[in-house]
Length: 168
Image (cartoon, rainbow, N blue to C red):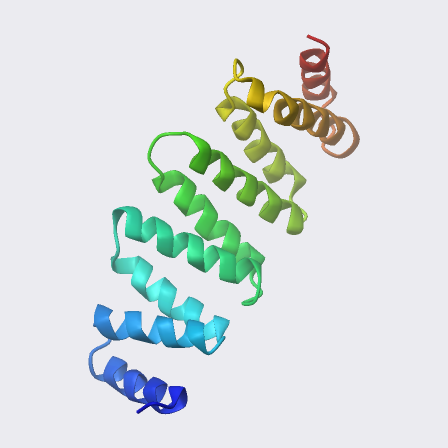
């Protein structure tokens, strides 16, 4: 049973016999990860996510999103997982801001500047206006939003609002 192919076959047989076995699914996910089979791995992550809760569910969603954004080749699915993770994530803070950045990047890769603007606006609201560490990021977001609203989204009022914030 040392060969990964035989182990996968045995675990897939066990999965067919008991489709809800988390232990089998977790082992399969690990083997698919180790053998670099992202499509199979993400399928198992999806199954594990369905029955998970709390921090485990969040971690599974983020792992699936990473695979979809990369090797599994499904950025729209990555966006779905990141959006769900954002809704389920408690509170605010650095983790939430990082999740907003990942979601924004995914929306850009999908050509959805409108959704990017929404997540960028939310990131801007999430950054502490009094914290010096966020000054440059806030400025960058204000500028990018002003450009997008003016040049691509046809919202000059929103563009002016961000330009005024830059001048303050």
